[in-house]
Image (tube, rainbow, N blue to C red; front, side):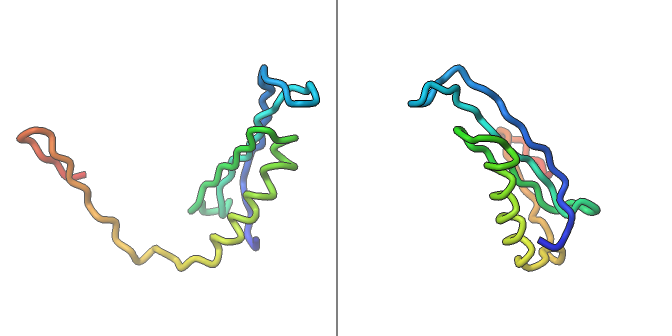
Length: 92
């Protein structure tokens, strides 16, 4: 998508079997970008994937490619949240 992405794949075999008698695998890819100054984190999980690399990483690339077209929100001030706990209120 035009910038470096840091990420890690994973695969976990379950005790369930598919219609072919093979154990079902949960695969995932967790990533952040840009690598040098992270602004976004993406997790893709496939409950019946082949591997994190082949099933999930390509979907994460699509998400990151879409994110680069979003406007830069750096000028937006976060809103303070107020939580009320009985008679005590505090601002975070």
